[in-house]
Image 1 (cartoon, rainbow, N blue to C red):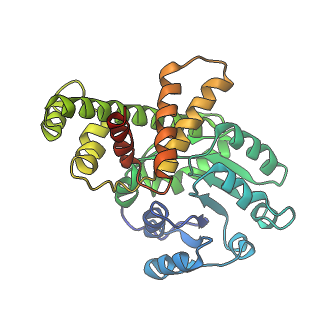
Image 2 (cartoon, rainbow, N blue to C red; image 1 turned 180 degrees about the vertical axis):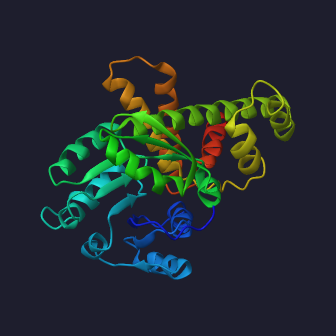
Amino acid sequence: MAENNTQTERVGFVGIGNMGVPMSRHLKKAGFELTLYDVDSAAAKTCAEELGCQSVTSIKELAAASDIIITMLPTGHIVRQVMLEPAGDALADHLAAGSLLIDMSSSDPSGSKELGTLLAEKNVQFVDAPVSGGVNGAINGTLAIMLGGDDANAIERAKPVLSAMGTRIFETGPLGSGHAMKALNNSVTAAGFAAASEALIVGERFGLKPDVMVDIFNVSTGRNFSTELTIKNEVITGNFASGFALALLSKDVKIAADLALSLEMDMPLLAETNRRWLSALDDLGGDNDHTLAFTSWKNKTTQT
């Protein structure tokens, strides 16, 4: 993306991790005045030095330096903590009236709707804008972004910022709809990975070669995101290093399953997908790469 030094909005970015670092890089390249914040202040400082922007160590400093806040954090609960806790001295308390929060985390949609109500009371605008495309998409600036919001002006204000980090912005509907879409998308990804994993486990037990199976999937109707990328590049090779933690994918699947329950809908495949990923999470712990779930499911077949 071409550098643009005409941006007038000051952007504060919260969450300098695997996704946050490359996303921040694209914001700086697009010409936004950028301030970084993370609980790991050393990580924020290192990234800021690389990009030629500033990092801060306090919420109050971040608020003073920002018109728009972007959060890229592990859960919506953490986003809420950053914005509203402690009462009277949280980020939302220090932001100027009319400031905008863009939550790009994978958060619970009902929690986002509630957060929006609370932020409105503090004169802070809010849109949800989770992403798909993973670390590679963040590095390449090609993320797909799902944008939800109740305020048309806030949505339009967010678009130039989001365009610096992604190539496709989908307006999904009211506040929380972006987060709902992200969870449902990831539940489909998780189901595809689980289905491909089980096929490989069964096929290998029968005598088929996993690498040949994946090659056949990828030129046949069984092809999906997982067979083309994560199964092929991480499971078959034994790398298990996609960059997406098991805790994060399991969380997204659970959000989707809970959404169905909250709508009083019986979705047995979604429920079973949730059960499978929670089982892997219990076996392996959340810090491991999500592709290691394959080993958990495979080991269970040898124990029965």
